[in-house]
Amino acid sequence: MTNRSLLILPGDGIGPEVMAEVRKIIAWMDARRGIAFDVSEDLVGGCAYDVHGTPLHDDTMAKALEVDAVLLGAVGGPKYDNLDFSVKPERGLLRLRKEMDLYANLRPAQCFDALADFSSLKKDIVAGLDIMIIRELTSGVYFGEPRGIFTEGNERVGVNTQRYTESEIARVARSAFEMARKRNNKVCSMEKANVMESGVLWRQVVQEVHDREYPDVELSHMYADAGAMQLTRWPKQFDVIVTDNLFGDLLSDLAAMLTGSLGMLPSASLGAPMANGRPKALYEPVHGSAPDIAGQGKANPIACILSFAMALRYSFDLGIEAARIERAVEQVLADGVRTADLMGPDGGTPVTTTQMGDRIVAALDASL
Ligand code: IPM
Ligand code: MG
Image (cartoon, rainbow, N blue to C red; front, side, top):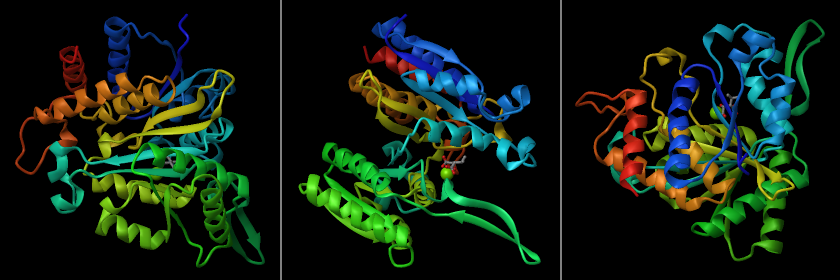
């Protein structure tokens, strides 16, 4: 037994393939750095539904609440499109987020030098980009009640509810201000205070937390639609962006695409500290299960590997080892190693998922 426990949930589609490469990095940490983990593995998403008839078994949920960190691959696939809403693969992920109370979702959007040409924007707009989106993850319209499809008179109505309590806003605002202090000390908060009461409250509470506890951090507010526009116009104006669950879902996909490398971006979802002082935490790549390329060795394992690096930093206080992995990834990219998703218009021969993992391990060896 070590004092570091990790639950691995590879999930569906390319999840198991990219997670196999993370396993290599975990083994490397043990063998070459003397940093060992107790690793257990379980099912989530469609594969859990196939076996248990639910996308997340209660036993798996209980395990997730016990470990120091959960590492998830991806969930979903066309095979499950027609399932009832309550057992769709995505529900497994949403249940984990909700029951672990992972209210702060950290989504860095970073442009790797070697990939600046891959962005759909001009190179000078994205080169060197390094922003952090903090998305509220356990409330808002994703979970608000009432919700459902009801009958009213002679027609159906679909209902979802955007709802935020003051304490839900304040805690994610604190996460953003804390993060900003470790970065460039700037937070931009995004909502739609011009049309939504929940947005009015959001803006007020973020401002109050700022004035009371973080007056040293530079704070600005933007309507989320204008924020989307500014993100494509001049993304480097931002440092930390804090926003609600739904706007954060949209804005983080947008920001990820700016970097030209959706297959490269990790995320961390953090909750309150556990008894041992570590935050409840789940780490997952921003990309999905990519069923169209699953099982073909084409997937890019970098986002999942960088998610493990985030786990080292935020759950295990191993920032130096996290940086070692990040440098190894940068090195491999600088050497021109590319999976299929990173092939430019000039072509070239892509490496497979496994080969990419091996190259990163080799770069780690070279770092010693
Ligand atoms: C994400 C995804 C999820 C979300 C889906 C898979 C439920 O898009 O993590 O951004 O909407 O939150
Ligand atoms: Mg999304």
